[in-house]
Amino acid sequence: MTQECLDGTLRTKVLLIGGTGFLGRHVLDRLSTAGMEVTVVTRRPAAVPAGHGVAELHDRAPRRAQFASMINRLAPDSVVNAAGEIWRNDASLLRAANTELPEQLALAMADIGSTARLVHLGSSLEYGPLPHPQATDESCPEEPRSEYGRTKLRGTRRIFEIARKASLDVVVLRIFNAIGSNMSPANLLGRTVQTLDRARRDGRPARLTLFDLRQHRDYADARDLAEAVLRSTVSRRLAGVPVLNLGTGRAGSAYDLVRGLALASGVEFAIDVLPAPEGGGRSLAAGWQIADPTLARRHLDWSAARTLPETLSWIWQTAGEGQAQPVAGCPAEGT
Figure 1 (cartoon, rainbow, N blue to C red):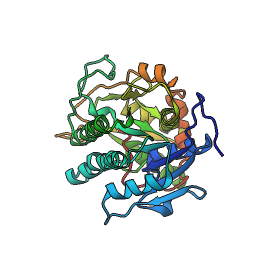
Figure 2 (cartoon, helix red, strand yellow):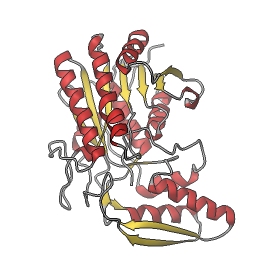
Figure 3 (tube, helix red, strand yellow):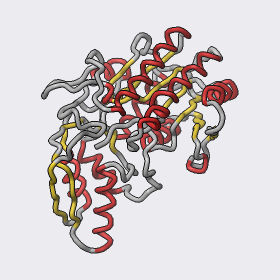
């Protein structure tokens, strides 16, 4: 049954790519509670919660043809791409997930003349670094410093190139450091949860270790970000607004996160801060980054609702629910 959503539009059927990854699972939950009919596109159908539609993605078949067939058959009102590669530092894997997959999805929608809105989850690391205390808005230079950021930006640009030629309805949401329940153990907070939980069960203090990266980031609650995705699927106010930044506009450090989570757990702890490693990972190039979410407030009537202590408390309270994947499958920034 068709349901009127948020601002009066009638977008109720959503095709969700990457709905079994960290952020994708929160998006799936929010879309479902809003009354959306969601079909999850995944290579792991067993990981999709009961009660949701599933479209299995097969590795041996061309992505473009599979996507076109799914969209033709299901006729979604919106397509949300929450898939991507984050943690494995392999150039071919990053390129396949962050550049080629969104390109194939956009080409498939162009092939069949789809009128569905494509909501693509991008990354704050598609931008270049800015000095403290400047906030990153949508007009800031796109100068990524990591291979992860470069592959994400190439994916975004290919989507826009295809959209211009085929008149697709596209919005890119650039995520600033999503945190929430059931994060990958490859993530700093995911590892911290595991360490605290082991210490709690063993009845001993937890010894927590982190690198002294001296970075400050904009950490947003995954539930707030999922709300923004929902609003992006239904809003009628996005014409001509191709990119929106999603963040809190506030900065925190890795030390703040680890200490806050340990305090929320109630477990006795000590923190060892080690010298930062030589070289750089996906986010070491920038020492400061926060979002300017002005456009998201204006066009989605959205802003981050939860405080960092609330989010950290939720992460601890829900520790152990579900199975966090060692390799996250969503383009959400972490530590």
